[in-house]
Amino acid sequence: MRRLLVANRGEIAVRIIRAARDLGIETVAVASKADGDALHARLADTCVDIGPSPASKSYLVTTTLVAAARDSGADAVHPGYGFLSERAAFAAAVADAGLTFVGPDAATIERMGDKVAAREVARAAGVPTVPGTPGGVADADAAVAAAADVGFPVMLKAAAGGGGRGIRVVHDEHALRSAFGQASAEAEKAFGDGTMYLERFVERARHVEVQVLGDGRDAVHLFERECSLQRRRQKVVEEAVSPGITDAVRDAMTTAAVDLCREVGYRSAGTVEFLVDDDSGEFFFIEMNTRIQVEHPTTELVTGIDLVAEQLRIAAGEPLRTSQEQVQRRGHAIEYRVCAEDPARDFLPQPGPLGRVTLPSGPWVRCDTWVEPDGTVPPYYDSLLAKVVVWGADRAEALARSRRALAEFTVDGIPTTAGLLGELAAEPWVAAADFHTGTLEHWLAERKDTA
Image (cartoon, rainbow, N blue to C red; front, side, top):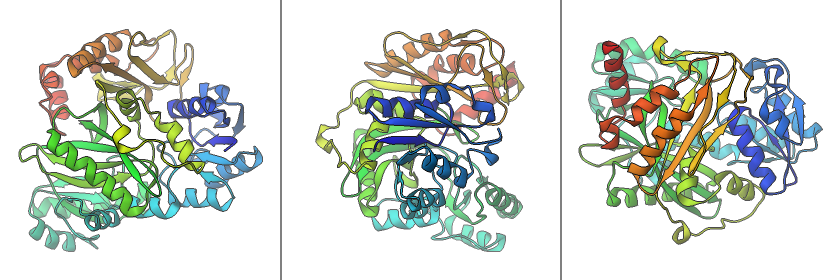
């Protein structure tokens, strides 16, 4: 691998460019009109203009990105996360152009991206799955019939879904019939596939994901991350490792994740996601993400392994450099997603010009960002400004460092979620790790009622 095109923007593009440079790989950035002077565009060795500001006319146009890679002399393409990162057609187009796709091949992305098919793979590997329909359900009548076997409450989910879209929790037949058409239409619009399936809804569940690396022949895990603090099924805070599971559950879950990777001959970095019943301790496979995750820095801080660099090495044909016995964890890491949103206005996105910017720093504080003083937050993309990631010798130290780091984060010109996250980090129930996937939304609702 000599020259890498980074088919993304923002902090993940910056992250990938830096990892490539550490490995001596030249980089090509792509930038829409809105991003012409962005940090990622300036950090790369060269930058290609890919057109208008809306993502649908730039970052999501496969032909434009493949042409940019070919014309710039790149021999590999890294998709980052979001945008086209889990589109099998994009991976296939990159490969058809004679270029290396930094990620699993198109067949694996398609197989594991279809949640129904992924559940079948998990069952074949002996991995526990949430009770639900073995395949998609054709319509509301079929969903109601299936729910009679699964048992209410159920979660109606898009087979090709992600990012919390196309999901509804329903508690009875009337609600299921009402939600089916809306959820299917949302999935069709978001993913081009309106197929739905059902899972039993675990009411007090933790969302725990296992980080994996595979080279197509073998796989290892890099322990797990706790992702239960969510708003509208979007992760807000993530930790490595989970404070809410036992060592026995951790061992069984990480073993299951590696078994799944071996079943599909997985190649690249990925995550195997599970729900953990907070009452029984049972865990169930829910999906696999075939890309680098937003929250990957927490795993890097506790293991000392550069996940993006490992992705690049594996894509270049190298075998895994680390055996399972060599993967060790130390301390605790927490990541906070700071967004250009106004918590006082129901998290309304806040694009616009920035003034002074102060980013947290100091011992064991990492801030992955694209933000610069006097820059601009464009209105066309997601609202993520930065990921504030801290490490501590234990979880209590990491939480204390979190509060200090988040207090240092200031951006003039627009509201952000940094202050809210600082309040969250000071909550006693967070310190006690007494939460599940619904806890953050309950806290936000109570906070709003008492404001």
